[in-house]
Length: 334
Ligand code: GZL
Ligand code: ZN
Image 1 (cartoon, rainbow, N blue to C red):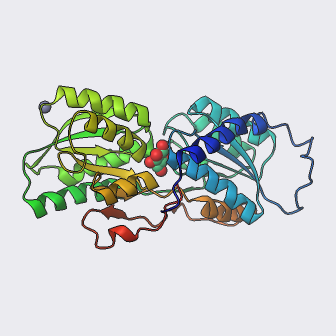
Image 2 (image 1 turned 60 degrees about the vertical axis):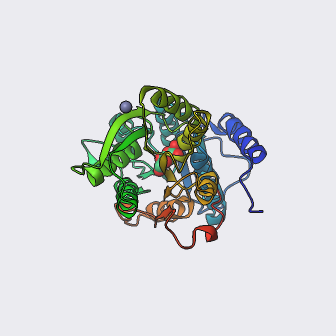
Image 3 (image 1 turned 180 degrees about the vertical axis):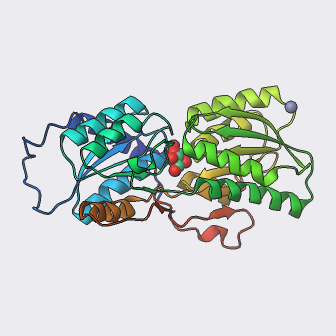
């Protein structure tokens, strides 16, 4: 039986992470150094994580913490619990602490210029991870490491076109569960998916609702859309957490996920891959949370005053029902 990121482990991790902010938040200024003196040349990285809304996010946090250990980077990790103002507070405390590098996963695209200007004035380089920002001044951050969300949206759309081509499907009513409003994955996955099916009379997006990347909201929204529409043929969901909730709603409505409703989802959590192998999901677009090693490598380069690429995208792919090696997918680790 494949090692699963079981429910017990999930809650244990969640509890640990929930307690974490209280241990690390409100970082004291550097005058009071931590008990164990860091190795002289240890890079001090301040990381603001946006929250813990999905197994993807938890996997991302765990990977970053493990990677810091591996890299000998001293990590100050703050969890903003889904609030932008907590990320701004954390960034300010990293500036006060005079960290070498600041990295953060911006929960939304807007509203960062002021605090990033403060980091720039303090001479601290800022690395965006996992999500992008929109800013008047691109010099406010030195680079982005994370997914190409447009490519992810394209992979989702291309699968649907391939499925319709292979099976001669037409008149497909599509509903969409979108992610956190004005976050870059939500904007770009939705935009690229639409571009793929634009102008093709076989496809119609009949409704889009935001499930905010949350399982519970994904279920609620799917229940509502199932009541509102006499027929739903396709669900395009911006993340697996919402998809897992939506599958509950689909089954409670007496429909077969993967059969009556074609399901396309993004992230590649183990639970989604399991459903893909069981035929309840038709396509899982991978979005890897395992960014920790790349982040630590780039942070070390920045601390040493080296140049880094403006954009670093990890290798990603899609897993679909048409893959020959569907049963050989290695454990996902999140
Ligand atoms: C994508 C990441 C998204 C995941 C969701 O890189 O920002 O946030 O797709 C997570 O699961 O909530
Ligand atoms: Zn309808």
